[in-house]
Amino acid sequence: MGEVLLGPFTDLTTVATSVMQGVRAHVWWLVPSVLLAAGLWGATWVWWWRRAHAALGCRTVVDLVPSAGFDPSVEGIGRHAARLARVPAAAGWLPRRASGVRMRHRSVEGKLATRLEGPARSAGLLRLPSFPDVDVLEADHGGDDVRPIRFTNIAPLSATDDEQESR
Image 1 (cartoon, rainbow, N blue to C red):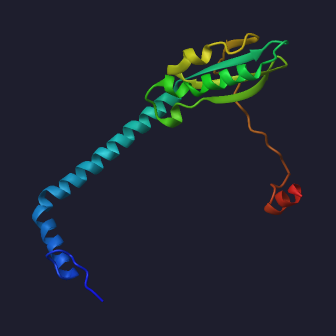
Image 2 (image 1 turned 135 degrees about the vertical axis):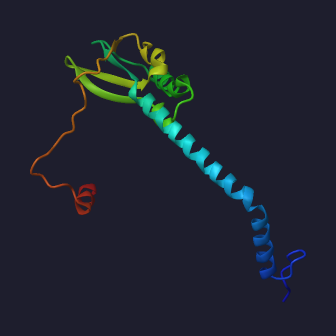
Image 3 (image 1 turned 180 degrees about the horizontal axis):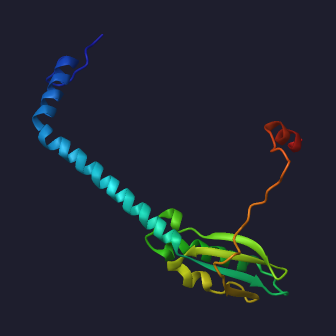
């Protein structure tokens, strides 16, 4: 049919030979450059990992406890959600996994409470009252950890059980 035009080269062997000659001529700076780039990438990764680990180590925790007459409007819930969406931006330049907000629902004295956990840099935003009938309490970091629920002597569900439940 027609031959592939490779510029001044007429076949692939001369192209490969030319590339190898160019690499050999510049190997004195190519190898150190690649090693330096790999070292910089590794050092940056370790620095970013340590930064995320330090940010996850110091987080702010607040409890939102509603009063008996708590009845939020749709607009109020939207404002609260928008405020929580601004927390990563308020935290500044942090790794993504360290700038998120965790919400946990729990019972405090018989009332459903929401526990917000977020970056320490955005503590002021987390402590702002969202609704007029909700108390914002500073949470203790003590023994109120979430405990997993364990079912003893019960086999886990299999794929066939899931299919049977959906019918």
